[in-house]
Length: 120
Image (cartoon, rainbow, N blue to C red; front, side, top):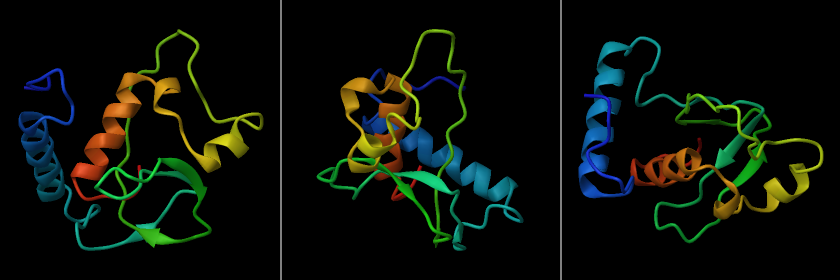
């Protein structure tokens, strides 16, 4: 029930399941997650780029901008991982290199684009 049907997060089966989960969330939490309402973005957020995938994802400072976005919650584990820090901020605001991101985050970026959202 909670496992993706394929190893490829951008595959059609995974996309269909993600759309189903998103619709379920919007149905059950309609009072707090209105699908047609933009909300104030967090201070820093990942701009995943356009759905065609030609834009590199990058961290932006939202400046109070309002839009729709998806949030990703997962266990980061104990292995050292790429994170946003003073040392990585300038580079992250230019582009996030896929090869440095955990597979979970790479998959989330791909699905965010395919679900029609710009921000993660």
